[in-house]
Image (tube, rainbow, N blue to C red; front, side):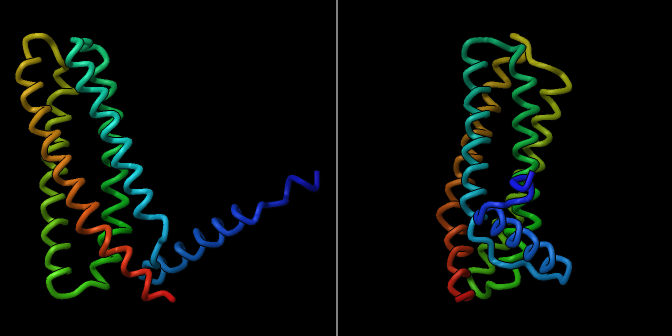
Length: 172
């Protein structure tokens, strides 16, 4: 029974960090999160894996799998965008200036437009479903969406994420 209340050092440290984040957020501050970029990159990978499953289902004409995959894609992307909009961009917005801030603001605005486009695409194909008749149009739109997402992910990981990670130096 005594083991029930013992925490490992790691889980205790994570709990303390999570509590520090909650307290800072209540004060209107966002602390640097050393795991945030890795978490966002993992989410990119997860969303891209689902996207690849959608592409594969299209190739083999397994249209019944596409709608549930679209729902998974929507859930993963929505969660990712929420994390970016509540933790990543607000942190950078308070700490960047000059050209770096301009880049971040422009990319945030751009992502808002991309997010709306993706959600409209998902709504179109989850409400209407996919059939052989619509498959050619869907494949074309899916290819375009894939190119947009890949370009965006590369920009975030190459341009924005390093700006976030550089902020860690301010905390030592």
